[in-house]
Length: 151
Image 1: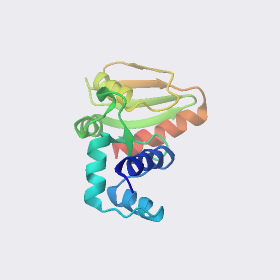
Image 2: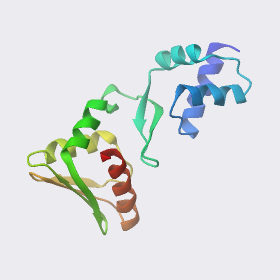
Image 3: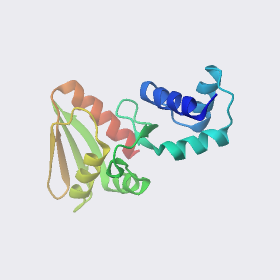
């Protein structure tokens, strides 16, 4: 099949499924009768400029299309987040993050880069970040996601 057909199918697949690895993508395409190799998928990923982003649903990384290069969250930011965060807890419709002293602003900025769903806003001090969510359930889900990232 033509490269454009295959790449269109890749874009369709990553928009409807959380695909974490190239092997998963190869298997999905083989199930749809595409005769491809991992090397071909690797080239397609590069040509399509796909990146791995953190899923707000599962807390795992998945392939996605970058709309602009500022959306990508590098592993360096994730490492800073992991090192700086002491705890993540929810309180009604809030998610409260305790950080090591002086790191709340950095953690708050990383959370903004994650583009998590339903966050209405965030406020930070020296060692605390407060995220405002529309309801208790969304606060709970966001807390779970951030705890997965922090661990």
